[in-house]
Amino acid sequence: MEQEKDNFWLYIAGLIIATIVLVLMLKSREMEVSGAGEAQQQLKAEVEKQMQNKK
Image (cartoon, rainbow, N blue to C red; front, side, top):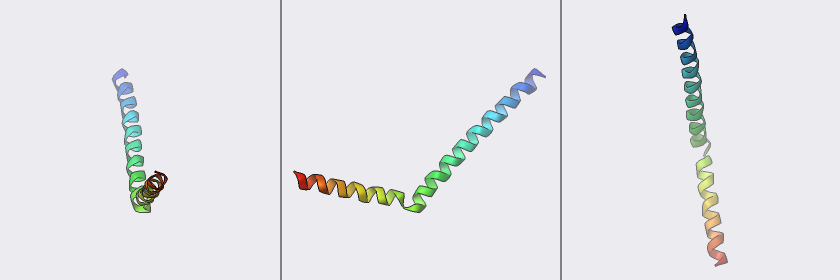
C-alpha cells in the first residue's frame, strides 16, 4: 500500500512537469509565429540608432 501511494505522487509530479514543459514549448512557438522576436529586434535597432545619434 505504501509503495502504491509513493508511485501516485510520482505520477502527479510527472504530469505537472510534462504540463509545464508543454506550455513553455507552446508559448515559445507562439512567439515565433506572432513575430514578437522580429518586433523586439526592430525595437533594439531603433534604440541603438537613437543612442548613436546622441553621441
